[in-house]
Image 1: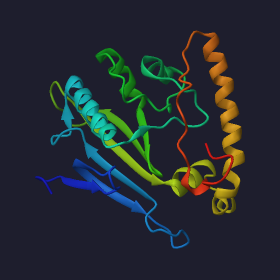
Image 2: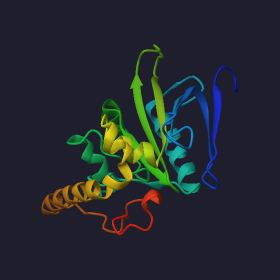
Image 3: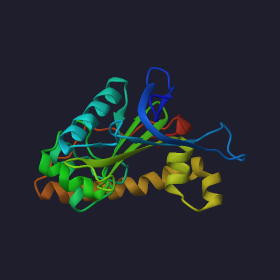
Image 4: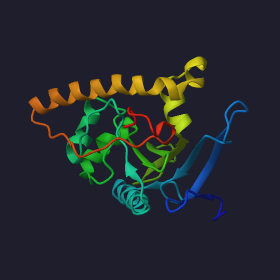
Amino acid sequence: MRGNLGTVEFEHGKHSFMIDNVLSAIGSADTDVPGGIYQWSINFGVSPEQADTHEAAMARMAKLFRDLRAKGWIRCIDVGDPRLTGKQAWDRLRVDSVYSLDPDYTPTIDEWKVAIRKMPHWVFYADGVYLDVSLTESNMGGFVGKTTYLLTMDIKNEYAFYGLGYFPGNADKIRNWKTLLPAELQKYHAKRLATEAELKAQGYTVDTAYQDPPIKALQGSSTNP
């Protein structure tokens, strides 16, 4: 503990990292799912006071992303979403509020103020683990000249990210997610290509160098991205 807040260290080999200003950390497990905890949800503040100016909060987020990138975490774009970068990825929020943003892009303060109303999020992956960082802001704390920021970091293994993520609420499909996932990914990939074709016609640049994460559970399958 540091002060009244906690510190969490997530151990993942060379990709390990620490989070300060932690308010809560909850793990999810199931007796029918091998491997123990398959998802962690960590709530933490942008600063020890959990409030800051927009400029300072944006700088802290940029540092968090730099630190994660330095640890080998790579941006993840959902297989059904277009592969956009920089400002074009940021602007995608206008039509898709759940689009994962580019952590390497530094927005203007005006862009930041607009985006934080939509609870923006950034997704990373590293060696079979997926990390989703989302941001919520409010003025509940009554801080003068500052805004209350709450961050949530969801850390998932492949079962949680793909099994629960692609087949929510369907117990049979979740049990057989490894078998069903390749065909499901192909459908979403087709959706991505169609969207990208439309965006190219509008002048967008598609990052064709981007590669989807290798799925360890499907290694050896020809449909593994």
